[in-house]
Length: 164
Length: 240
Image (cartoon, rainbow over all chains, first blue to last red; front, side, top):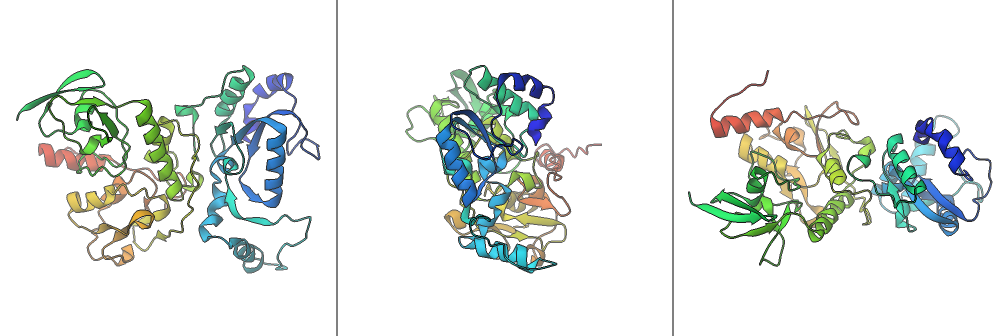
């Protein structure tokens, strides 16, 4: 959501790029021949994994966007429980801590299965650029996007890097 | 004391015998990255971030634990050094669970600051995600092993400055960890004086004041400076 903190730069951006896919763009499938994808979030379940491979195949430049994508961050805390944690975390969340109607979410083909291990994006596919931060500050996003738009190889350093 | 002449990054320098490369470089205004070094306690060369090249020596040497010698030619910055420093730093991040977003030291952390200054925007190694606990049995302080980089500042400050000898290191390799007394909960320690110097010395969010939530933990290094000045210069300067 810190992308929206770009404020008036968003208006300039709309003239320069076509936003073809996002959680707020009404597009069911990830399109082909995408120039740049800013990818958010850690790879937690089978759906994430499938979409990531699709995105990689159809995108020239992938940017790992935010701490969850870059480090796996908070979603990966369950990795500390070791392999086989998928049962125990669901048990904890949906049975032990449930106030009403305790039951495990299970609907094949609808609810994706959790992966054994949560991974940062670059552990699964090649990533061109990294923009860490929780969230990445708008100024850093603007710096990276501007560099890409002007055809310069993005390079953020020093104060333009932030974790947490 | 005999003077030694040497060069650091091509700069001719005269140094006192017994001084470390790090001390001499700092006096000459040459910045070498450090993490386990803390002014006022002895150096152990634990973090390997201050590695430098010495002409004629095939291996890299830690600037904090290497004494100057006559005719030494030292390089503090090169492609090779940057490569190893970045690698070392990434391994520190990969070894424990450094979840900056939910850490008490977020924004006031020396490990984070080091990552920024060395241009680390991601970790190339697979994170180990080890299972470590948090010891909150002590009345005033807590120890989160997930954030520990084993710099041993807490151990050295506890033994060398406070003289309590409460903090120690146990285990080897990835199993190494900081323990209290004979590996007991901190709250049951009989030697701990609750002075809090270990908390002030810690570079990350591993040692914290109880009651700090994410991003709230700020240290007061002035307390350590007071002690160092008192010991070395016999001046008890209380900051107002």
